[in-house]
Amino acid sequence: MIESADRSIIQHRQLQDLKHTINRVYQNVPFYKKRFLEQNITPQNIQCLEDVQKLPFTTKKDLRDHYPFSLFAVEQKELVRLHASSGTSGKPTVVGYTKKDIEDWAAIVARAILIAGGKPGDMLQNAYGYGLFTGGLGLHYGGENLGVTVIPISGGNTDRQIQIIQDFQPTILCSTPSYAINIGEKMIEQGMNPRETSLKIGIFGAEPWSDEMRRKIEELFQIKACDIYGLSEVVGPGVAMECYEGQNGLHIAEDHFLVEVIDPETLKPVPEGTEGELVFTSLKKEALPIIRYRTGDIASISTEKCICGRTTTRMSRIKGRIDDMIIIRGVNIFPSEIEHHLIKIKEIAPHYQVHLLRNSSLDEIELHVEINEELFQQTSQNLLHPMITTLQAEIYEKMKSNCLMSMNIKIHPPKELPRSEGKAIRIVDHRKKCMKGDQHELC
Ligand code: DLL
Image (cartoon, rainbow, N blue to C red; front, side):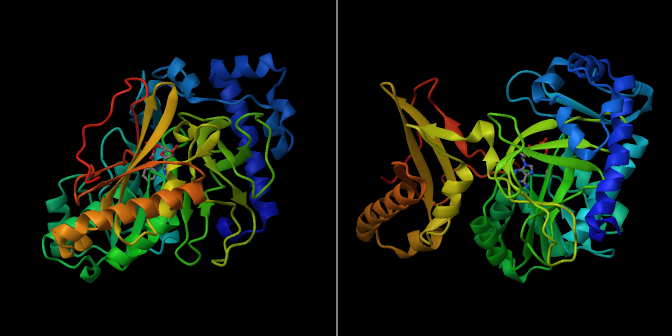
């Protein structure tokens, strides 16, 4: 089994596949040939894995500039599927798969479900969105490949999700972590106990989440929650998966992807254990091989053997995307770091949004949080205001001492912040419009 093989064996195979991939893109994708030649590189220059560092990076902009199909290495008639990422600005990025790519991806995701503790015979409720987003079909084909019974419910329609959990009795729930919380809360609202369902495992990802959020979800449903990572440009979900046994870093599918971590400023590699931007090179993909793709995601890697016995490189949880890093008066922070400290406060529900505002020429942060429903119900009206003032002060201090930032804390009544059915929106940037949000805060 490659996942527990000696690292020299893993690397030997990676080198063979890397050479093959570089040859293919050189011959079949004019963009890569031109880029390589600009740097005086031909496939013969790739003799060891470190030689990958001689190659130029590929970015989202490159994919957009070659919209829709110009980076593909096969003819359209060989494609059996297309996916695309939603373009928040400009054109989306389009990705394609040959029949073999789809088979490989299904095998990668099947293995990911196994890594998370799933097994043939399980029933998997797949609440990732189906469509151009890779989450739905990625988990779907992976589940079928493993031999689990897949419920292709897709994202949204929370009442239906709950009904299906009750009636079909699935053992695995797949969704974004924020949507899992949403489902759990709705169950409580409807008088059910999410801890008493048939669910045993959660495979959650597609957005940054903290260990504290994991604990909340595990407690909410009484399940084991594992982190799944991936991005459409590299393949979709399954690029890395956290194991059931260790829950300490995500095992990278190294037989398919070569990982590097670079300093996003200098673009130089950083040492193992140091945070930086993840860069992936695909090793087996046919339709859209991708060379040194800069993901924009911040994490570190470790090659230490895991307690589960796997020897594959593990990546830490994603701290956030470089684009989502908040920089205020010289201090940098990711929403996941705010989440890490915030979620520990028991009076607060696991929902938050960071609003960025501009007052004169100064940037300000408003942290919008929601009070815990139970506490809200139990507290009499005349005690509510003093309690909220104390809570505000507590959160302010926590953020100031741990995140080194002064934030305006806005506390909302329960269920007021937007709930997600897919990727949660954690940052709302008003700085361009310089407009305050019109939500109703308690304070
Ligand atoms: O989100 C693929 C996916 C589907 C992954 C289902 C996991 C589960 P994209 O829509 O292309 O693909 O978005 C990729 O989402 O670059 C990260 O910024 C973020 N992301 C994905 N997984 C995680 C995770 C899918 N586990 C982008 N933790 C990536 C943090 C994640 N961020």
